[in-house]
Length: 403
Image 1 (spheres, rainbow, N blue to C red):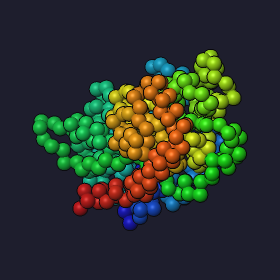
Image 2: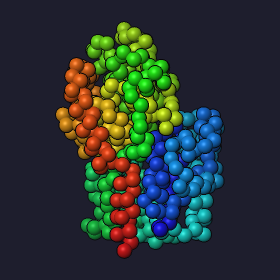
Image 3: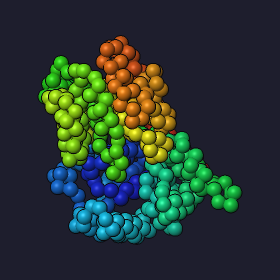
Image 4: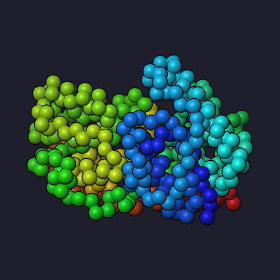
């Protein structure tokens, strides 16, 4: 049984999607036969997250791995979120966490040191064998410092696990120095789903009764944070599209509340009934399948940005697929790696409200098409994109690297 140390400089629990992704992956690695320990940071959490006492129940995962919180100097909550002071406190927190982690790692043996954080792995590469280090890459670094760290990490770890094919290509190119190929092994591993979350899902009528949404409405939904690192995720475009479609409601699940309120005001300003603006706010991860079951159509209206187009593998896409609901998504290369227009979803041009509206009308008026797309998406996600299968593939690749 390999010992896997998952290193994550995050608040836990957190309202952000990476917390769910990390917890579900730790569970999957343990289920695949690894002895898993998750090291997070002992950070100052938000009042809402501090009220959560059972992190296992909150994320709906089995307690088949252990969690340890490492001390660090976290002053980020005591300075304004924007500005230089916040940036300085970010680096202070990251550096103190990394120093404590290195000290703890000196006295800890593991077969695999696994992280999404390049700085953590760069530090560990000074004291741990190269083949024991695994980097799960979720973005291409920007800025001179970030690229410097990421380039060296890719060359100093045994295995890199990018979440898209384009990210793999760019990381391989980034790692080339003096025309020497990197000896690092790569494995593309998109995000996925915890199959058990969607077993025994309620019917649409049962879900709507539980959460109080109207039974007769045709609801197009968006589930997840309304922005990522201040980047717009296109929900405003979805609102504009729905203004062109009669008798359709919007179901929003996620936050932050101030952004949702701005969308509600825009919804009302363009003449749409507030009765059809259904906002659930932030819900516990284990409640997400319930809200997905209440929808008719799931939307991913991402705009075209370099990050969204090439380097994102949104968990919501896979959970939409598992919910047996029809999907409309922006036609971005990263999304098209997983779903195909007319086969298991409808793809539309990014930021094109009219094209999005036409796709919504098409699904509203064609029940058979909705069902066909939803059924194919469900079959595909269960066959190819479960965390359990992903964990097995990653462990196999790492062990091949170490052989």
